Image: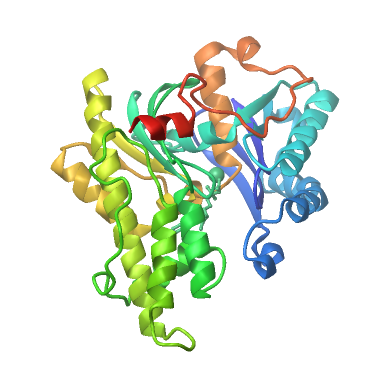
Length: 358
Ligand code: KG4
Ligand code: ZN
């Protein structure tokens, strides 16, 4: 089976061709970082126009790299949401156009499902369902029990900011650039994580929900309390190291709670998987590895290039669905409408309600 996947839901225009065995035959990712950098965050209108400008060329380049024509594909998949609606429309319309013109099945993929299944996108040693997923990206921070393609139970979510958003906003207020995650990680390498006393929001609270807006505010207060004048490199490094340590403690605490629930429901569960852009952070991976060792569970983290947004995870999620249900049930109708909001677990209580319960 050979599937083309297209991803345009945020600030990466991406395409990839993946086989049923999990081989990434070709992939292309065009980051819009330079276009959004002057604004310190992703501007939806700028993103949509840029996707529109580049997506055709990118798909063409990917096909060329693979040495394939559209007729050799078995299906075309695109992110159908959740995400910035202008970009999602561009990707969905591109995939539909290829599907119609070549009489191929079209699949609309939930972006979160792409991240959720990316840890299984490998040629060897594929992890089995069920597993516990910590999905940490710019727009989401969730703990999910992954039981199979299309089968997810949300155990916790953020009641305010996503962790990636907190990284990005903290970096912005420290003036160290965009995107914030890699900038904070690099600055933290030389920092003392204990110099500033920062909160661990939600730690030891019941349930598995997260909150990061207080941590971001604490960074602002700590920076404001320093002597007037520009922040010094040591201060920035210490604040970043403190932020990362606090975020790591919170992730480990919330994930430990989720592991209790998950393993109760699924004694056969054998892995803790981290995915999403923030999962590229080595310090956070190390912190979760300690937790995994304590709980004798395997920690699986996709390579950094599959953690941030990419087309391969979209093609792979399509392949997983096709394998699970067969092509006829897996394909979407051509009148599929992009979904700016699309929860993976439609039965989960709203974030606000879950927070109130905690
Ligand atoms: O999954 P992703 O590429 O896009 C979304 O679906 O949101 O995640 C982007 C987020 C950004 O907030 C970015 O700052 C964060 O992932 N990120 C990181 C790192 N690399 C990317 N956060 C922490 N450490 C990193 N090394
Ligand atoms: Zn993403």
